[in-house]
Image (cartoon, rainbow, N blue to C red; front, side):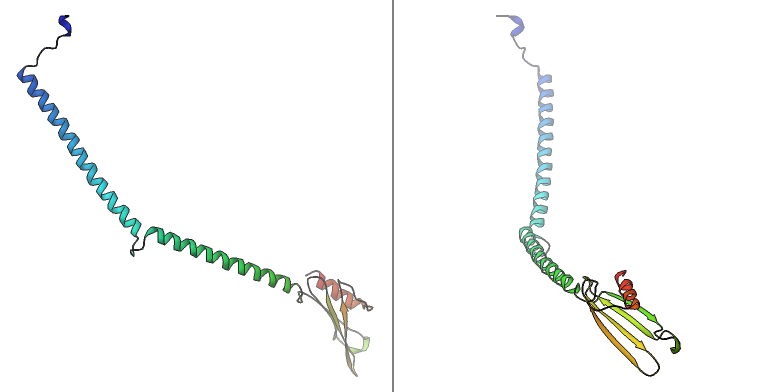
Length: 168
């Protein structure tokens, strides 16, 4: 047998130092384990508190309630969007463009007391209303307008009123 392969027994001082080192290492691992156990306990408490919520309701129940709220809001938005589309389509049929032209129909009447008013919807459908004033009487005429044109002959003032309404 080779003499270098034989391990020498430790002396009493060396054994004492080795024992102290083992005690220090064991104490370190014991304190580390205790520290980690306390941290784990605190994290467990925080986790339970978070999962229960502030009013005792579980986090899962709170999330499910919020998801249901979002779904309800989505349905409400879809309904409102549909209603807005209906209102938009209906509003296109209402008068949106108005043009007014005042003029003097006769030389001897003074100021511009006669008028032509064009009232059109989004598709340029509507009417032209003309009021002719003179000293003895006044008359009002209405002419239909379809797609910006009338089946009746329009005066130059009525055409101007249609142009003014079309620019708005």
